[in-house]
Structures are given as structure tokens and as C-alpha cells.
Amino acid sequence: MNYKLILSIARSLLLARWKQTLIAAIGVTFSITMFIALLGFMSGLNGLLDGLILNRTAHVRLFNEIKPSRLQPVMLDTAYKDNYHFIHSVKAVNSRQDIYNSASVLETIKNDNRVLGVTPKLLTQVFYNDGTVDITGVVNGIDPVMESKLFHFGDYIVSGDINGLNKITNSIILGKPLAEKLMLDIGDNVQVITINGDRFSLKIVGFYQSGLQDYDKTQGFASLATTQKLLGKPNNYYTELLVKLNDLTTAPAVAKEYAAKFSTQAEDIQTANAQYETGSFIRTLISYAVGITLLIVAGFGIYNILNMMIYEKMDSIAILKATGFAGRDVKAIFLFISLSIGFAGGLLGLLFGFGTSLIIDQVPFVTQSLPTVTTYPVDYNPVFYIIAAAFSLLTTFFAGLFPARKAAKVDPVIIIRGK
Image 1 (cartoon, rainbow, N blue to C red):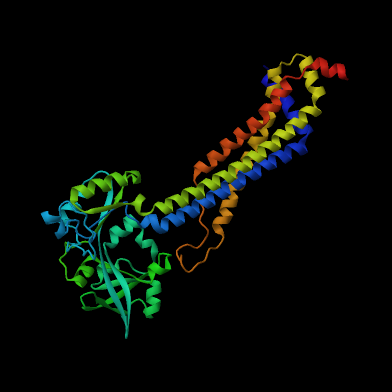
Image 2: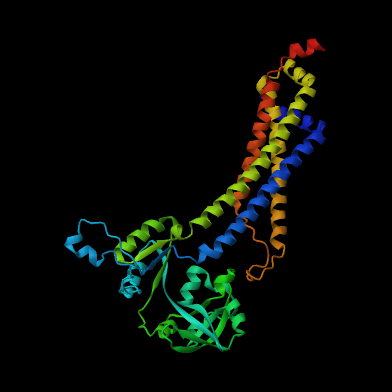
């Protein structure tokens, strides 16, 4: 097979019908451009939405849940042993809410090679006092350094200094909507009333805004030491341990193991946020479906153009075969034409897709709920470009394969006799 001659003939056929060739290439270019832009934008949006919840959620959360005692007094009476028990107004058992032997548990988890990091947390209900008005809220006792490292806490501090929680005694970071409701600014003091009726004055060192308005209206963040002081508890009193794993998929198994090992309740991220993962998967699936549909439509356009080219070039095909070209040579010519269109259109599509993504990435995105996000999110994952390039060549190959096989089967005797 003389490849140089075959390429020369294919190039001549491409240039002879350059308008149709250009239209086919534009179809591929448009499809690849939209595939990359759509997938990059949707993946960026998924990352943003997932980040609002999943990035701030522990892979495994250890806690002690208040729940009713499974063993009620009537069950201990042998007279009613074989009876059905219908018990009303079951009271919660008076159990501890903190993690038992927390220092030892923390050390054990830190030494687990499956664990990326672990940080303790302490939650307490409070009233934020505004003159005669008490606003119900929560104070989260955190380790600011570990919270930022593992759960991107620092990314949501819109003003102030996160390190102020450790530097300044009795300090707090308030949710911005809550601070606006209390008409307080950084440097002011907020009065906090605990569930025991104790009143504390905490200095505001920053504002927090997560993007979830209802959540931010009730939240305050203080150091672990400050929160333990609010509750009058010792420095080893923690209500939660938040674990980040190296491999997210192992969370359910690790949660079950830790629950049995440390005698606590454990919740994995898949259970806590199943609805978000489902939504993200569906959005990504729709993006791929739309992009691939565009490529298939472009493939049909190439198929139709090559079919028309074969009918119009029957004389040329007959002459080629009559002068010694085999069917596989003719097939190779038309496959080369198809792949050339796919390669050129795909290459331009990759460039235009990247350019379109850059344009989307610069479009201002201003919203009160997400002050840290200034432009529309775009994901520039190289995998998208590899998939687009491979699919453009694959689509155009199959689009040209069937017309090429038809051209290879042309009988030159019938064509020439007809003329």
C-alpha cells in the first residue's frame, strides 16, 4: 500500500469539496467546544456545591447520642416476661454526652495510618443577648488550625483573623448574618448566656459566612478552651471527634470499626450526605450525556457528507480501482478523509473549549450568600480534554467507516459500463 499516494489522493478529495469539509469540521469543533465548556462548568459547579457541605463534613464523626434506654423496668419483671410491652412517654437515659477517655481515643485515631487528621469539637446551645432580646444560637468549640487544615474553615472567614481565637482569651467568630442582626462589629463584645444561666462577654474577632443563610444566623465559633469555660467543663471534655480519612470510600467501614472500638455512635459521610452525592452524580451524568450527544450528531453530519462525496466521486473511485487500487486502498482514502476532519475539528474544539472555559471563569458571580466566590466556577480537569479528543476521533472514525466500506465495494466495471 503506497501511503504517500493515498494521502495525496485523500487531500485532493478534501480540497475538491472544501466547503463540505469545512462544515463537517465546524460541526466537530462546535461539539468539542460545548462538551468541554459544559463539562468544565458543571464540574466546577459540582465542586462548589459539594464544597459547601462535603468539604466541611467529617468523613467519620464520633459522638454520644442521647437516646432512650432499651431496657425498661417492666421488662425486668418476670410476671410480664412473655407479654407484649406497650410503653408510653419513654424518657431518655441519663448518659454522658462527651467522648469517654477522649485523650486516649484521640491518640489512637492519630496513629491510624488510614487517617489524614482528627480534631475534637464541642457544641453548646446558648442565647446571644441583644438588650432585652435573646437570640437562640450555638457556639462551636473548635481547634482553628486543624479545622482550617481539614475542613477549610479559614476559607469562610470573610473578615477578621481566625488566629484571634487562640491569641485572644474569651473571643468568638460570629456568623455574619447573626452579627448583622445583633448590630455588632469586629472588636465589639457580645453577651452570651449559657443553658445553665451563666453570662459571658466574648470579644468578636471575625465574621464567618458559609453560604447557608439559616445556618449562619445561629452560629458562633470559639476556641475549645473558651467553650469548655462556658460549660464549666474540664479541658478534656469533647462532644465530638471529627476524622478525615485518606480514602473517602473507606468511611463506612472505619465508622463501624470505631463505633465498636470506642463505644460511641459513629456516622460516616456517605450516610450523612447521600443526597448531595446523588445530585452531583446526576448533574455530571447529564453533562456527559449532552456532550456525547453533540459529538454523535456531528458524526452523523460527517457520515452524510462522506456518503454524498462517494456518490459524487463514483467515477473517480471506479478509475482508481480500474488502475490497480485495491478495495482496502479506497477504504483507507475515505477513512483518512474522515479522521482528518475529526482531528482538525477536534484540535480547534479543544482550543475553543479552553477559551470558552476561560471566558466563563471570568464572568462575575456576585451573591450575598457566597462572598468568597467572585466568578463562576470552572474545572480545568485534563481528563475532560482527553475524553473529548478521543471521542472526536472515535466518532469520526465510525462516521467514515461505513461510507469507506461502501466505496471499497464499488465495482468499476458497472460504473464504467454505465457511462
